[in-house]
Amino acid sequence: MYIIIVGGGKIGYSLCKALLDEGHEVLIIETDPGKCEHINEEIGTVCMRGDGTETATLADAGTTRADMIVASTNEDEDNLVVCQVARHKFSVPRTIALVNNPKNEAIFKKLGIDCTVSATNLILEHIQQEVPTHALIHLLKMDQQGMQVVEVKVPQHSPAIGKRIDELPIPPTTLLSALIRQDAQPLLPKPDTVVGAGDRFIAVIIGEMEEQLRAALVGA
Image 1 (tube, rainbow, N blue to C red):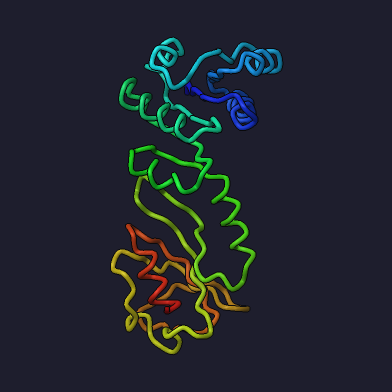
Image 2 (cartoon, rainbow, N blue to C red; image 1 turned 90 degrees about the vertical axis):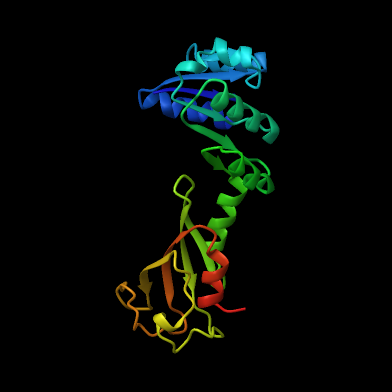
């Protein structure tokens, strides 16, 4: 694939090296001449000096034939503009943006960015996995399909304890795909499965059903 990376910082530099090792054609666009020179000395002639938010720069970079563009600057506004211009002006089929402020992630998704990466949220989710009292953990997000995989732990105070799954208000677009109990093999949840304290459910959520699932298995 031909992949353009806008932003030659640590992330862009490391990503470029990894993609080149996999055999892809990669070009970095970077405004800082010093960074450009360093990248070209270290990796080869893969960095072009310019402003990736400008249409003329993207045109010079051959964006019309790009398979993917990755916006990895330190400015969320610039990353959003890069992806928007690449998609609407040059019809790039895949856009990926680094989101430095996690509060902006929802805006990026609403504006059609294919994939957003928030380092803050990624670290937070790893921390949450180490906190045993955290009720719902995000395991995987599939933005294009509007799906996500979560893990829900049933706490001691849950109103779901002692009830069958088919007695609970599980959202209709949610699939309980696995049940994990202490010292037992994972089970496939069935309608007559009785929920117990400490049960952990792996669920596939379609749409905005996270809060409804939390209410059903965790409670208020």
